[in-house]
Length: 173
Image (cartoon, rainbow, N blue to C red; front, side, top):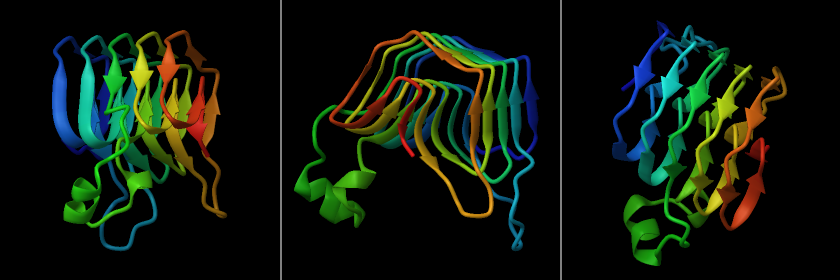
């Protein structure tokens, strides 16, 4: 689901399976609508123990996608987070109207896609894998000129694997 509020002291133990923006605690923390340039979404002191699978794009142990001043703090993931390790088929790319860089991508132990937001004091212990932009804490960190992502004081001890842009903390920035 989507959240623009604050989620504190939550725990998920069940496995989660979906197509895109699949998170152990929250699927998406978006920008606010009506031209706002920020989000009010925060996730603090949460634990995910379930496995998280996205068939196409963006999977996170805590949050799949977070934009514009969102925050994830003091969270822990122990579940496996993944998409397919295989290159997306040409048929799937054509049907979805996107390119292969956008599929089986953006997978993180804590956050799959991070834009102008913060991830601090989090731990990933789960195995993280996919095809492109795979990270122990953040899969893909998009930085705009007006603001920088703050990924600090995090720890990854899970195994990370994939094809392109693979990192122990951040896969691609």
